[in-house]
Image (cartoon, rainbow, N blue to C red; front, side):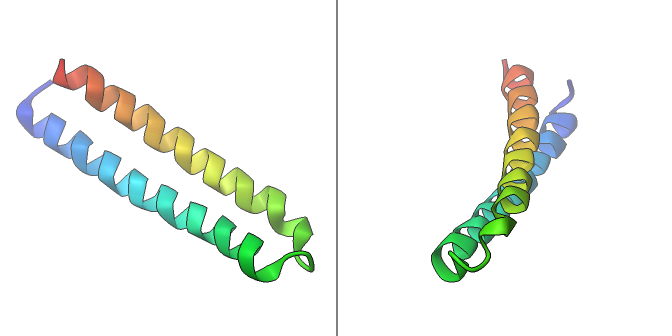
Length: 68
């Protein structure tokens, strides 16, 4: 992998981390501000946060491997 490709992958990891943080924040806000009234929304928010974590993890593992 070229240095430029590694930089692009690093950027993608950072963007994925940002999205992950946003989704986690949305889940946190639901829990802190809207429960118990909106409890039925928990699965959708949790799934979005989980998927964002998976995307970040996949990209991060690629970056770690590329840097070796």
